[in-house]
Length: 122
Picture (cartoon, rainbow, N blue to C red):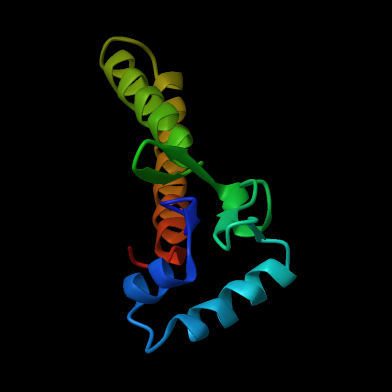
């Protein structure tokens, strides 16, 4: 549902391998009860805004769903590379900055991987 944004109970049944569309409808109604999806007039279900629950931690870019922490990975990687380059020509303060940005990079990568593992397989 997160990837297609709108699906019928038959679509969900086929995608998840359920035995009947009724079983898929049962689960879709549970999602509807918790306001995670909206039921359309034609019987299809549409995913609500991504500003709830665990979806706050992700950004959708085309067909990719990425953890928001991926931006911190890019920032800290750029900082670590820059401070490493500068530390070769400058004083010891750049080594400290390189160390701190590397710690930030390792933590951001760890959190990104951890958030990505929470998503169900496609």
